[in-house]
Length: 166
Image 1 (tube, one colour):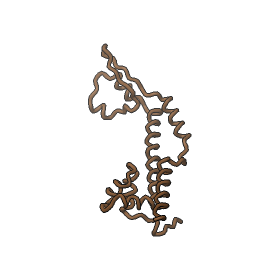
Image 2 (cartoon, one colour):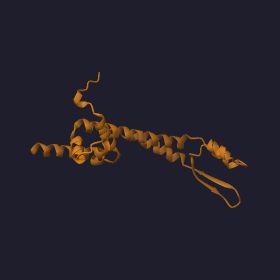
Image 3 (tube, rainbow, N blue to C red):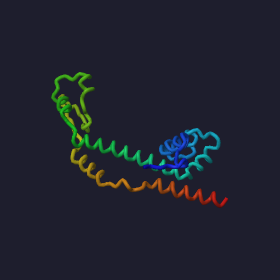
Image 4 (cartoon, rainbow, N blue to C red):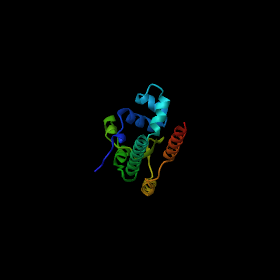
């Protein structure tokens, strides 16, 4: 059972702030984009100090990193295991129609050359390198905290300390 206090729930504007913040880590612009028009810099500083905002930013950033890694992994899988039959069809085709191209998969092609004698040369991406990259991705730890979060946490703690003294 997941129990949240009302203090843990983000308002729509706070959620927008978090989403805009993870794009470029500019708290002032994120506050403006989220609808904090009056003194957006102060609003951004105030928001960034809140632990629930920090937690949501961390969650969104981790989600973004995971999505990015999934896309990278998917691309390497296509390079490592993808079909080359469409490329071979193109190589041996006497005439190619533009409709044929639309239905073909050329993801694995690294380079195409048309030689002087009319012949065609197709180079494919290296499947072994793609497999090596996939192996590297598998070995990486997802639990490592990105340095931006460490800096963000440090800055928020510094701001809290400064405000407490005032």
